[in-house]
Length: 236
Length: 236
Image (cartoon, one colour):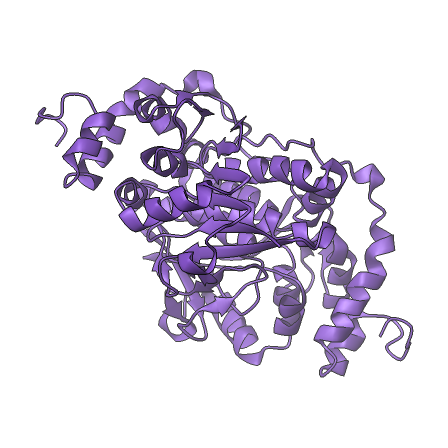
């Protein structure tokens, strides 16, 4: 079996996980070799950044050699997870044999903290994109980015597009179109698409700094890689 | 407080719930009167149609008068839920005072079974759309449909678009655009949009019939409203 393992940790943004999970859970209908699992350190309900709690189907130990491993992101809990030794250890171990190592949104910061993005082109949520360079990656402003076994998606909803692209690679574009039809993914954003010309990304850097300082206060070495001027009191 | 209550029952398609939840959980940042809850009969992990289990934050009894109630869909478990008296009772009670009664995907069949779609324009997953007429509604082939307090979305991913439209109504389009920016909802389906001219919707009717017959075998009256020729053995 080829196990597509979604990695769960406390506090995720659930759409980061559920978007691609809903897509890739259909792979088995097109190739019975595929199965999906949600893996976590413990099998208990974890909080998310919404009112929903979520629980994994398997522990890390149950799925030591997944075919694919996919890491969702989130806000401060994800930044804290960059220093979670058990999580990073699982990812490093899984990466030794996985054919696909993927992330959604700030999940790529966790891949970066695990040392898995060294020399890779990668993306993440636009607010943290420039930080990828501090983790050895080359930040790219695309919806999703493939570099060898690494596939990283932009913020939150981008995981759906990434997963459909991955499904196309694994079971073919015709099958991916049937998955797309099943989830009726024919987007019509009611306020239109995003107009990036109106988004001053640099102006959000202080918010990213503040979140990183709060989340990684006990991990000065990692924090020092991610923010400038660690001693500055201004944004504490 | 205005509570936006997402209704959970066993076996849902989690993207139906998590898409709009991720959007509407942001309302409180624009108007502190809003809060979101996930409500269920019991506070325990429920299975979904994927490897993820999900748990509510509140019981039905905790949130008797939500401002908005939103029902996700799914496959056979959702069809079975059309005969869940506790769930239908909660929805009928909530509908007496709710300003917004919404569904995603086949969640509208549950609203219909509760008698809440009588005389309303409504939509659902394309495979079940024609069945809405058998529940007293007028089926409409749109991404989402608003009729008085009722807002129904098409299949699965359409809940994201519906939720952004609802956010626009509740906190304004400028705030909805900021929510959209936060979840980076700038869709780029890698295989392109859906080409409905290639989808023979009528050819899927036997699959819908089969699922309904399997799910509602113990509820012949409701089943009789939803399928023709109840006695036909062909698709049993």
